Image 1 (cartoon, rainbow, N blue to C red):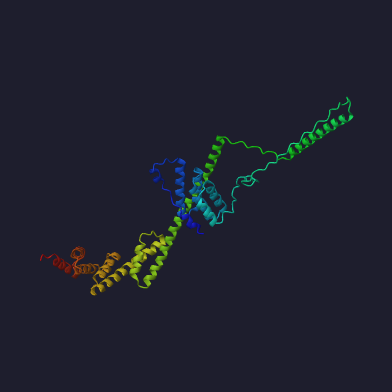
Image 2 (image 1 turned 60 degrees about the horizontal axis):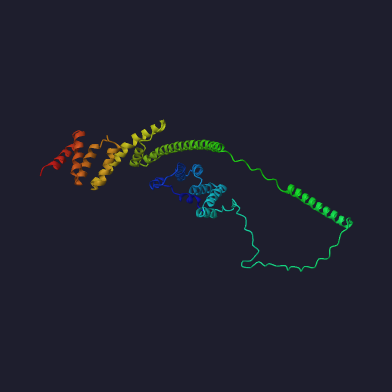
Length: 384
């Protein structure tokens, strides 16, 4: 069974919606729901240990929070603590008559045999009489009275009568003594009653709870500090890894220069422009940048010129624009601007063409390109 998938089935509780419904929620219930929602956030970030701590605190505030008990049981099952998982689900089963989820989860994960069920009540006594069968009564017939014999007068001293009296007294004494011996034997054979422990006072209970809460808060604070430290260490490790990846790309740039892929090398260097390289790596980056950018600008200009002659004006514009990005002070910049203006003009974008021609006239000394740019501006601005 995929316990990890089970964890994802639990959703956060919208406490605000319950409050808007007009229900009065005690502080302990509100705080327990808040901790339950925070535990679900921890599970989404794979922090099962932090989720378990929050769920235990939520259940301590609200012992009848069965949804939190179910989630705690699934968390314990996920981390391999099956006995604790079974204890959590048993609490749900004892408090709910219809604890379908807890029973289903325990059956699927074989947790039912870990903690035996509580003993039930005593069996009712068996009635030996069958239903509907009347009790039979046996009545004894009275014996017929026989006539009493004539009373005889007893002598004042009867030895047989005295012996009978002595025998009866001895018989009663023996019976009394036997009963006394049996009572003494039973008294010593019966187990001694266990002393009933005194219930702790409210002050003692409150002191114990406060001490447990204090210890829990200390442990929770320590875990949070460790968690924050781990996050910072993770961020530092990621930054260090990214830096070394950038250093490796510098060697890739060298390889691209060797294969004359100047534009690809220039694009990679521009992507790394915001990285703060250290000492020797910074010198290597600056050296490669100064070397590659003029070469990449020339490569882009040559490519744009070929596309212009092939009447691929949109592709040519993109290539000429790269020249301006790679090397704004490139020796072919006047020609680049002129051909960019021509591409805009041939693509019927007169406004952009005039802007590029004017930039060429304003920023570059007179040449064949500036003279032609002025003529193109006159053509585009001439009133028909």
